[in-house]
Each structure stands twice: as C-alpha cells, then as structure tokens.
Length: 536
Length: 40
Image (tube, rainbow over all chains, first blue to last red):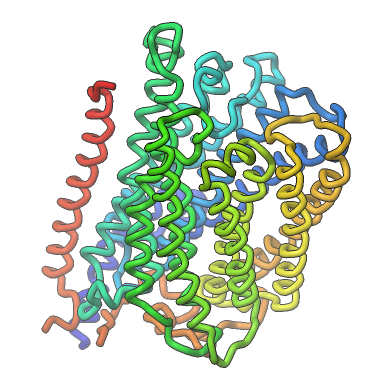
C-alpha cells in the first residue's frame, strides 16, 4: 500500500512540474481539475448575471405597451445575446465545471486524462464572451450598429444582411464550439481510460453517464453548427449563396443545419442535470437510486432520438406531410425514455426517509417544473397545434420551463449539493431555502403568464404589443425582477462558503450520500486520490 | 487484479487516452470538412 501511495505521489509531483505558481499565474496555468472546475463555475455565475441583466432590461421594456426604454433594434440585440450568453456562457460552462470537479472524484481518477487541453478549453471561453458582448460597447463609440440582432438562431437571410454583430457572434460561436469539443473529448477519454479498478461501465455514477452522452452529442453536432456559421460567414463576405435565395441558395437549409445542432443542444444542457438528479434524490431519500440500468438506457435513447427530430422547430416553414408526421412522431417518442427517467426519480423517493435540505428542495422543484416543460413540449410537437403556437409566447414559456427550471435550477441543485465538498464549508440553509422559494414562486410568476399570452396570440421577439396583453406582461415583468434579485442570495451563499464562512463540512457532507467522492476530505486534497480507491 | 495505478499503468492509460482524443478530434474535423462537399 505504501509503495503504491508513493508511486502515485510521484505522479502528482511530476504532474504540476513540482512548483506552484500563485496569484493570476496559478489560474492561467493550472492543469488541476478542481481549479479548472472552479474557473468554469465562476465564469458561468458571472455570465449568468450578465445574461440576466440583459433580459431584465427587456422585461422592463415589456412592462407596458409602447416603446419606453429602447429602440426595437437594441431590443432585438438584447434578446439574442441574452440567449447566446445563457446557453453558451452560463449553462454549458456550469455543466462543464461540474464535470471537471466531479468526474475524477466520482470515478477515482487522479485528474482529467488531458489536463493541459482542459486548461485550454476553459481559457477559450473569456475571449469568446468578450467577442459576443463587445459590439454593444463598440456601438457606444460609433463603431458598428450593435450586437447580433437575429436571435440566437442566426436565421438567414436576416443574418446574411445583419451588421458586424453577426460577424462577432460567428467568431464567438466558433471559439465556444472549439472549447466545448475539447472539453467533450477530455470527458470521454477520462471516463473510458481513467476509471478506478473495478469500476465497470455499469457501475459508473449516473452523473458521469449523463455527461458521457452529452459529450458524444457535442462531438456529433458542434461541427454542424460550425459548418453552418462558416457558410454564413462566406455568404456575408466571400460571395457564396448557400442561404441566399436570390443567388440560388436556400434559407431553409440554414434552419436544417442550425437545428440539427440546436435540438441536441437542449439535451446537451439537460443531460448533465438529469445525471446529477438521481444522486441528490437518493441522498435525501436515504435509498439507493431506483432503476439504474433504466436510466442509463434512457440517457442513451434520448441521446439517439435527439439527433433525428430537429425539424419540429420549424414545422411552419413548410415541408411535405410525411416529413411533418415523421418529425412529429419521433419528437413525441422522446417522451417515452424521458418518462422512464421521471418514474425512476419518483420511485427513488417513494417510501424513502426524505428530508428537504436546499438541494432536495431544488431537485423536487425541478421534477415538478420540468414536468410542465415536458408536457407543453408535447403540445408543441403536435403539428396541428404548433401552427397556432409557433413563434408565440407559449414557446418562450415552454423553453424557459425546460432551460431555467430544468437547466438552471438543476445546476443550482448541484451547486448546493456539492458546495460543501468543494469548499469544505456548509452554506447557510436558511438563505438556501429563501433562495429556493423566492426562485420557484417568482419563476412561475414570470413564465406562467407567458403561456396565457402565447395562447392569446402574442408573438415573441417584439418590443411592443397590443393593449390586451398588458396585464400578463406587467405580472411577468414584476416576477422577473424578483427572480433576478433573488439570485443575489445564491451568489452570496456561494461567496460566503468560498471565503471559508459557515460550519466545516465533513467528508460525507450529507448523511445519505453514497459514492467515491464522499470518501475524500471536504475540500478534497490538491491531488485527488493519491491512494487509488477500489470499487467492489 | 491491479488494485492501484502503478506508474506504468497510468502512463499506459494516458497514452491510450491521447490516442482516443486524436481519433475523436479527427472525427470532428472530418464531420466539419465533409459537410462542405455534401450536394443538396
């Protein structure tokens, strides 16, 4: 045993070159999975607030009919960049931060398999975020006409004709895509090659399974997005006509290419969260996870189905009836493996000794609210119904139930669950519970009225609207400001833990927690698993 | 059964990891490049 310990320590010394830079150099040059995970999570939190401030400006404009605060062009820029920031710079980096922190701890690996690539993957993100938001600043100095105003979907021909904001966004998406691909390669390689002896694939923690499928989806779809925006770039500047009907091109081709990436992207954002949910539910129900194999096969089935359903995002663009039927039924088929996951989550809680600490509150809130996203998704998947709801606020409400309640609340679940492990400190349970209840109530206050607005016919992406929509919009705006402000509690709770405030956390921070990561101290040592664990 | 990663075992796993990473990277690049040659 001693020999082995010395051997692995030897690796650890070699791994960081035997010296420890301090200050900014430490963060620039670090190859430690925990440092890089912390950077991803910090970056995600900052960008979450940046994207949030943008959309609060939008909601302020929508508080009452008429144009109050901004011109329509600026409004369009805010909603487009809000979405790009939240998806690519907040949710995805948060999930990658989880992966960096947790995968080596959970599979008993000393670090990620490719630590330098890991560092590079992170440091590509800040320049990309700057590229995305810089056109706002340039416009203040009279350069260009602001950021991308096409929405996050870059639809042609609007994006072919747009200003320099589109070019900035195209380059930003390329860089963000490279970062995602590097991260995905690292995660696949780590899971396949670095598992502790005895950890077979069917003993792999579900969080790692969720991320494994995510990583394969990213590798399969990001090149398609990169190709599509490269074609867009050549249409804009090099005389090609891929998407320009006047030159023999086809704008609908862009929609196909974009959504071939865009729909799996939804699952890319959600699968890591679905992976962490069983851990939280099992911990606070003090029971083993129900249906491990069912959930693994569910993840795989959803991963496969996610790449064959893309055209349901543009049923109204026009396509042959057999195509409509195919995309409708294949989309609805996703509800089957998703229902398996839901039943497994509920069965895990069934007759458990449940307690409702903040992570569990968020997990249960996630199940209820994400359920609403799933059910309204079925409505939108119906071709006949979609003709009515497409491009309405119903869609906006649906995907915020999916990506805020499903994605961001899932990330919050993970943060509260693992924060004691990462920082060695317990967060304030009182603040956590305030954060949960304020978030859930204000989230519903914000987005539930948008279902009714959509049903009543209010189109999305407009800064002005008819008088009949005024009341629901006012309610939605009040809800959004409460939602935004209540996230300050979240940030404060995290910062306090990071500063070493709060009660010290034990190795097994939660009574019912199972898994290798809880065998290590809280916080874990600089080099994880200096003594290799055995999995029975 | 190997209970612990030895130096050699870790080196072997890292080498296998690098090979897999290059293969995945090549697949990504192939997807990106081949796309431009697909006829509509």
